[in-house]
Length: 567
Image (cartoon, rainbow, N blue to C red):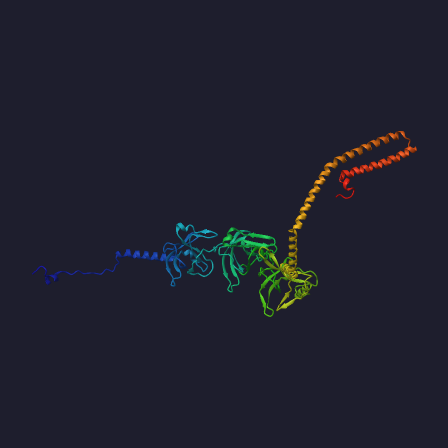
């Protein structure tokens, strides 16, 4: 029998062990059981301490990393990005983030999220720290509204944080101009707020602008506060000259808004910021213009050009604004093939201070239309005038012209019409035209022919040989006369001087003789009388000689020509 074979009898003699199943738990299973309990506790603790999970949609995931990018509020971590994926339409990036439990009460509909990156704008530089630490998501906790878990991320940081003290005010403007979100709001050239939002009204007629003014400057806004567009340079050209105004250099780049309460209006009391809508004026000059609800419209027809007249141009009476131009257009009359331009103007009667008991534009004792008709009868006329020579701007001037042609006020539809007079430039042009018409009636051609003939005769006369010979002969005669006069002066003057000297000596001798005779002769004797007569004759002769001497001294040629006129 081989060793591999087993005897069955031998196997039956071997005793079989008896196995008893134990009912006690082995200590070997205690370790995994304890580990499982610890894991379960940690899981429960993690679940209880874990904050809410939110989803944020951004246009791009630039700079964001799952598991690394933090969500911060005031530079404190309040969450972490868990995953980043595209949405179903591939239009946005959906960021899933877990938040800390403490922030859960602030995850309301007003909460805002945005990606903080380095930004350089016209007004400020922000996010430079992200150049070293990387981008992160900033949060502005919500304070009101229902709790939400899905948010639309902002592409740009909000202008004003929700916890900033201040007030939002609503403005309405005809056009936005250069104002943008973040543009500054000034009070007395101090920045006190910013533009936070703007949108066009559904009908497209105006633009609504929302501004935020920080405390305590928000208390300076009342019912009579005026806001105006302070963007760029406010250049005003008027009869007073050229004025340039701006709030700051920053407004030249990104625009801005300024506000103040005019001193002539007063505070007007507090304002309900949620309901009240302020008018955003185009410039500072507009805020001082009083507004009146009651307006009176009239038409003025002009035949000449209205280049330079625009809608909004002032209507003045003797230099004081009483209204403005509302509309103007061109009309063609097919019957007589003529053109004219109706200008619709609005007058604000409340601008005129009334005096007298019989005058009342309010419709009491006198009707407005009847009063205007009376003024037209006295000479009220409308006229276009140039307001600024530099720009050629026109305005409508109303004044009384007593010498104007008689006219009556008419009506076109519901509007009364005022007669017009030509503008000063047109009057000058009309006068020049009349002058030219009169000149055309003159026989200028015949006058030109006669003048040409006269000039031709003068030319022939000036060029004739006889005239030339006459001029030469006259010139020779004048030369001979000059030579004769010179010779006469040379020869006659010494002789006349000697004669005058002898006459003076004779007069001196006669006077000496008379003196000696007077000493020896009696005054009552006949000889004395005759001698006196003789002396008188001598005196007369001496006077004659003296006169002759004076004559010859003044006019020597009298010896030749006599006492007559000089030759």
